[in-house]
Image (cartoon, rainbow, N blue to C red):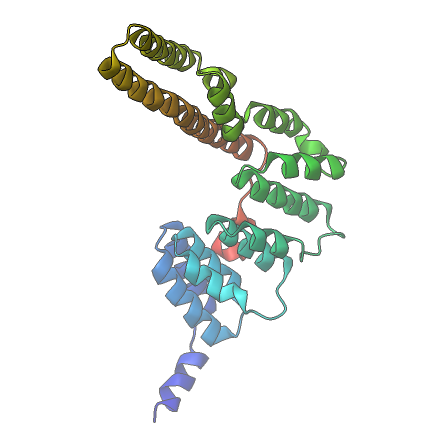
Length: 269
């Protein structure tokens, strides 16, 4: 009995009207209702709307559902792979994102090739792999000539990144040196003076034969020294994170921007 109303629904289905309704939901950012209508549209028309469905999940921050729509899809087109790579990047699955991007076939379309290369750079930049980003840009500089200024910014980001282990080692050799290496000059001076004063107090208490004061100052010196080493490491990590985040945002906004919306059906835009 259910097949009769289903056939009637198929016969009298108004495709343009439903397309307008889906487009309205999308523009109003009603992504989950839009997904439901896209699935119904697929059922009615047989159209492949997997990209649109996955993109709505992606826009709605439901990344796992977006991934599941595309992950097992057979015969993925370049647009599906690009969206899937963006989903992996948002999930911080950077290796999977790069593997997916290298599956794309964009050789016959220069504009699509530029988008692909931008995506590869985006993945490297997302986890602050400045060396790989620079290497990739250098290898594909001809295709990336439209964003040639990105090289200077990538190079600056790499140069400003400091090694936290080197900072800790330097502060272990000379208190405050690691902070100076990381350009935290005030912290470096404070660390050096603190450890030097405590070490001096320890020496003078030993010279005067004051055992109690010697052990107290010695313990404080050891604590100050260890704190100086850890502080150099932690502060370098923190400043790296702030600096890397700044350059990632700058690079993405100035050089790597494009919208995955370009691959949606025209009637949805």
